Image (tube, rainbow, N blue to C red; front, side, top):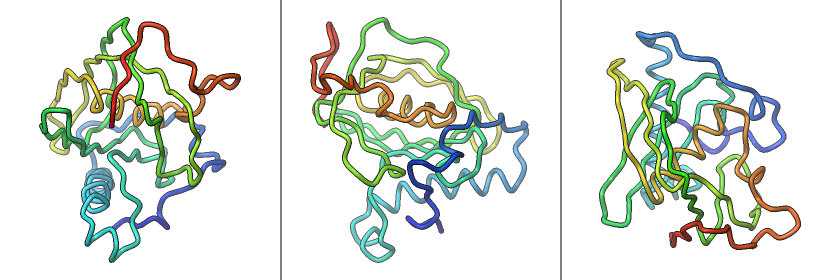
Length: 184
């Protein structure tokens, strides 16, 4: 089981690398890594498990965050309507996105970043992504709101991008023109 000790911190070179594609069908080792990412996110949201194992709550985790530079992410997040988006994906890729942007009014956080970095992180309001599940089956998702933001955050990790790279350095809370502000 993954713990906070397995998660590398901001400044580690792996977080700035472009991760490698995972060969399909996935190896047993890659499947195990992918499952462990999802397990961490689910466990971190369970107050008893989080307390017992010292897990910081998260809604997503990417393989580079555990120092595995491969294109794998796990997300376990609810949308505004209480629908659960729980996915562990190999090689996720945004295939289309809205022109309209959105951002979390509370800003974003990251399990690899210990300090709070305030500011708005503009992202696409709606995305369509493709990836492959644990069995190597193609998955296509159309997302908006918090799930869309979460998947974009995790996919950025696969490309060596950190959420704070998008924050306006001069005015972190400058409203993003024409964008939707999302409560979390």
